[in-house]
Length: 233
Image (cartoon, rainbow, N blue to C red; front, top):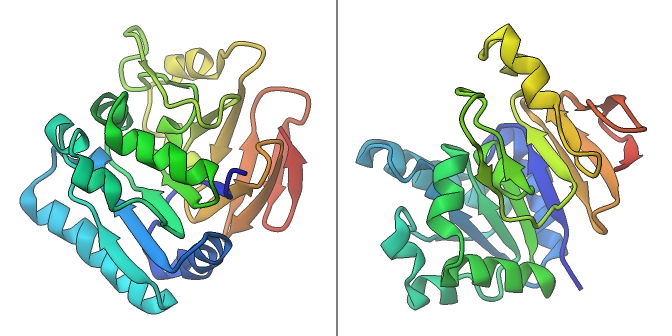
C-alpha cells in the first residue's frame, strides 16, 4: 500500500516545516530521513553543501537518522548503491531547484525506481517546489511558455503543482498566466503557498497544512483552502 505523499510550496528542511516532516516520517516504516537534492544538482558545491547541512539540522530537530544521497547527475542516478540507500526509508524527500533537470536526471533510473518502490510499500514521499512539480504528470516551462515542458514522474497523476504560489505570478509575464493554467480536463492545477503543503494517503482527499493556503485553480473544487481543511481533487 502506498505511503503518505506530500506536495510542499516551500520551506523544506526548515524549522517552519519541522512538525510536518516529523509527522510524515512517523507514517513510514523507519526513522530514516532520506534527502535527495537532485533538483539543485547544477548549483555550486557551496549550495549543495547548504542543502545537506539544512537537511541534517532538520533531522536533528525531529530526532531522525539523516541520509543524504548525493544524486546530482544522470550517472549518480544510475548507481545501484545510491538506490539501495533509499530502501526502508521513513521519509523520502525531493527538494527544490530546477524541476526539469530533476525529471530528466531521475527518469528511468534505479534511483527513481527505488523511490517509487519504497513509496508503494509504505515510505512517506514529499516533494518541495521543484520536487512537488516533478511528482505530477507534467512540468510546464513557466519561464518560456512557448517552449515544450517536461514529462513528470506521474506519481500524482492528476495534479499540476504551482509552488511558491503567493509569489509565483509576480515572477512570470502576465501573458504566460493563461497558458500555465490551461490544463487537460483530467489535470487539476493547484497553487501551494510558501510555508504550506498538501498531503494525501489515497491521492484523492488532500489536507492542507502550514502557515498559508493551497489554491485549487481549475476543476469543480476551485477556491482557497487553509490549514486543516481537506479537499477532494
